[in-house]
Length: 220
Image (cartoon, rainbow, N blue to C red; front, side, top):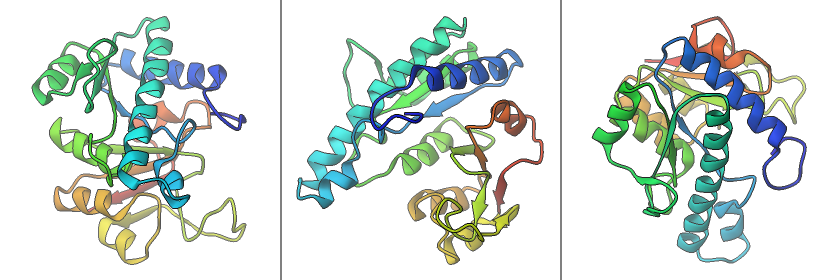
C-alpha cells in the first residue's frame, strides 16, 4: 500500500519484487504468503457488523489480488512465479497442492500462497506458519514496518525496547502481538524459527535470508 490509503502502490511492489528476485538469483528457494489488508480487512469489517465468515472470505480473496500483483512484478524482473490459492479460482491461479508447491520450488520458481488457509477465522500469520510446515521451510520470515520485535508498538510508544532474540514461549507469555498466538504455537510445536524484520529498508530481504543480524529472531 505504501503511503496510500488504499490499494497497491506500484513503487512498493516493484521494490519488493526487486529484492525477492535478487535473493532468488542466489539460489534460495522462496515462498511468499501475502495479506490483503490494503484492500479489505475481514476483522475490521466483522467488527462493524458484517458476518465474520463472509468478511474473512472477502479478505482472503483480497490476498489473491495482491499475490497476482506481486507475481506480475516478479515476472517483469525475470523471476518465474506461481500463484497457488487455497480458494479455487482456476482461471487466475493454481489450486494449492502441497506436492505441486514443493515441485515449483525445486524448479526455481517463487511460489506465492494466496487466500490464506481457505478457511475463515484463521489469520494470514497462521496461513504462513501452516504453509511453512507443509513445504518444510527452514525459517519463516515476518516482513513488517518496524525493525523487529519490541516490548510495545514502536510506532505508538517511542520508548519501546527492541528484543533481538527470544523464544516462542516468551513471545506467547509476553503477549507481543507480532504474530497471532495460533501461528506462534504452530511454529513452537514444530521448532520453526521466526525472523521479524523491516521490509521498508532496502536490502533487508537479502540481509535476512543471508543470516545477518537484523530484526529479531525467535527460536525454540
